[in-house]
Image (cartoon, rainbow, N blue to C red; front, top):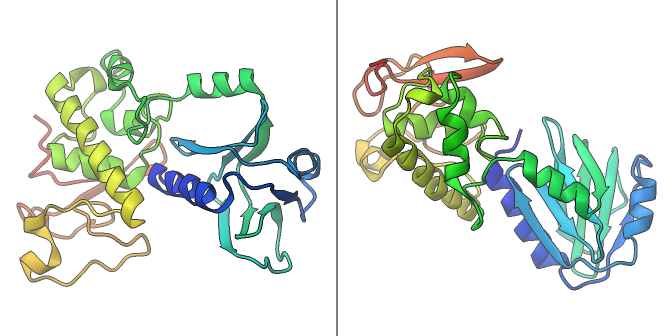
Length: 270
């Protein structure tokens, strides 16, 4: 599932391509035919992301809500748009180009009340200017749930996925199984500030890099990381490899059906 920085990048791409332009909307697959009919001929006025939710405004009260989920993909390209292939749920097109949406978990039109309810269910997004980290902190301090699970709970913090949660906990020296209510206020402040910086870097670069300058391949004289996700990281998918900081063996486990990665040397249990 894409992490939050990817969805913010999608919002920016939609703004650059479609804002202020009349949109042609269609559902070649047919599963969003009525929604596409309502959007066809309207103008895109805004595009935002909140966590992993893409929110496209077309004037009036209707907002197109897209959640890619595990299998959703977006393909954007210049005009002229090619003949749709595969199960294209929604195509948006205008003079500059097109956007094809396939396989999303959610593709729906929401009214103002539904939008308010959706936003109310989500935790603060580190990439949004209106985010309130104290809201997440209050939820964390009331919970016995491990902090690693809380960071993936989109009702607590919206946007981080498995990579960011592993990396910010490493960088803060926090063990992933520490109960939320045992996290200190300074630790939370560091984690939140780190999420804001790292995720903003991800929006700018399109990849997730979390290692500090002293631990880059160039600084350490090591080969670059080779992984489908790209980017230089400390613990994510580095099970059994030496920690870049203390040389301890990076460990992995399962927590709430997700893989967990940490360094026992840099993230002690106590």
